[in-house]
Image (cartoon, rainbow, N blue to C red):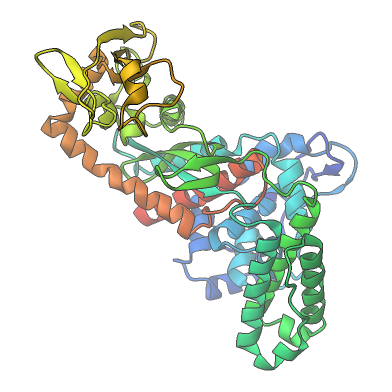
Length: 505
């Protein structure tokens, strides 16, 4: 937005609750110094470009019903509060630091709609209140993704009709560290920044806690904060101040969750057969231009495949034409294949079948041999199955299985029974899943050059997941609970999409 002697205009309207109200009249903040913005902030500045790209009045309209109509104190602008949260996400800093930076950083002032000389900043606790009272119960995730997709379509950026799907995991705030461990980590980071600034401070710091008692670690943390806080010169060093604020936030959070420090909504999920995590999953759909078109947030144990239907529907609702879906083997389940073949809402599914399906789901394939003449499997000890039977019914959403039964009397005394036969079991079986007609068609499609060509774009979403985690701080949850995780996801994806749109504009 071009500055002409005043900062951007915000139109405040009344809402209906929470004991804060917004004034009806249009408010313009005039300043003799606003022309400084044109001199100091270059046209290619990221925050200037975001201000020019996005009309943030949609936030005002969305949150009107969260404010009181005729009583209470005057509230801060919802647009400005949202922009604070966006700045916090883009620069991956704490509430305290993002507010403090708005005191002296001219690009922050410009973005927030403040006059250059304004030093009357909000209290950082207002951001917490805004999240809990104003954004609560709002489907911020779909709202913000929908807005960015709308902008991308208006600018002609999204031209493809392909979405790439995947899931990325986010560790819970309470994992992998216990409260004692996270306090020690943050304290260590603070001490390191102190030593880098002034090595002589080592002799003035309290003695570190040596046991694993939370109360003792809390006492040490408070003592450390008191010592550093009593030295204003050192505490104001930017790097020290940043670590100091991070430790304060962690301390406050642990004290709030003193009885139950575990994240109740987080669950254990698996990144691979041997590697697990405790936290959440964000299931993402992304256009070929690397604009995220839909997302859902679940606890960590949820499977990827069942989220496909919602990702496709959301992408279409946001204005994306979806003709092709590219994903990994997690999305090639029978239900998704059937979904893709729907006459009205179907799509081309470019996802390889799980080898367990395409190869007949042969467990311990290198041990159990098939005797083609007898039509039976032979176990590692050389015993042939005595009968076979089909389990499961057609049309039930799951594959049928061909089950081979072995003579359990032989298994009980077999020298190779360990790891093969479970002691006390009444039978020993070996199963092979039967490919459905849908799976067979997908297997045939996999062999085509068309499939191989379209599957090559899947790498793009891996890079996007890396950006969300390593650039925008999405590797670990900022707070506790699924609702907070969705809010964090909404801000992170909004920032990622806006930055991508600017790059392609």
